[in-house]
Length: 373
Ligand code: IPM
Ligand code: MN
Image (tube, rainbow, N blue to C red):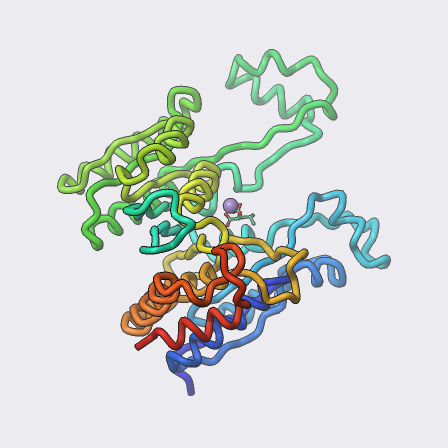
């Protein structure tokens, strides 16, 4: 029997190609694992009306963690049109499978490292090393939304929030409401993850990204919890920045930041911004971790226009693989993989088109392997 069971979820398009690169690397490192394929993605939405069939989550329950490639997502109307004829008109709704995985497995911590690799021509500046901790299960992504919005609902809201008055005299169809739900428990566990990370890796500071001067209730709760947790880590500097202001400062002086923590939507946005400082989609990767399970993924999508061409940069996928190895406790393998990636970048001989090279996805994986030693 293998030491680990890993759910293997390539998904759509280039997800398959970058996962092939990950597998070459894992086999070469000699990870003692059984990889179990799981169906996920657009194909299963079209043919079964569910991009994340129950058999996949049932299988995942029996594994240590999952590695995930990429999936295609389309707006609701287009998604419905692509359903198989027998599924049309059944009132099926498309939900992003990755958002569902995060909620169903309670993977509350989305950790996104953004590290400027030495010698990468895609760095905005060198000396950038920013890790974003994004809350992954609530906030604006909790899925609590209304539209059309009934009069009854609005009357309930008006009873508690006088500012609702402006929105009372309109047809149900003309108003949509998405909520941003913050809970003390949700805020506390993500903020604590950020501080624990800072402590473990000797980082100087943790910054909360919020907007409490406008979003007084939810932002206020985040700040309140942040201050309490921060007081338990006096050796780590801590402050909060408004989300709009930090978008400018991250571009201007990224070297001033170490660890950022944010609720779901702000974390989503700010982590893409941070990702672009150090190479963008070819590098951005994340780990979705809960108390008993984790899913690792590159941030990029399925890139249908490149599918089948073996053209895209596998670094994001390989960096996600490295996070998975660290999660499994395989520190030596993780370090070896990191070294392989680092040397491939500094040598600059075998790189994909986004880094000015002409190499194919799997050539880069082979070069990384060559550079292990
Ligand atoms: C990410 C992605 C997802 C998100 C999409 C695919 C729903 O952009 O992991 O950041 O917004 O969370
Ligand atoms: Mn995103």
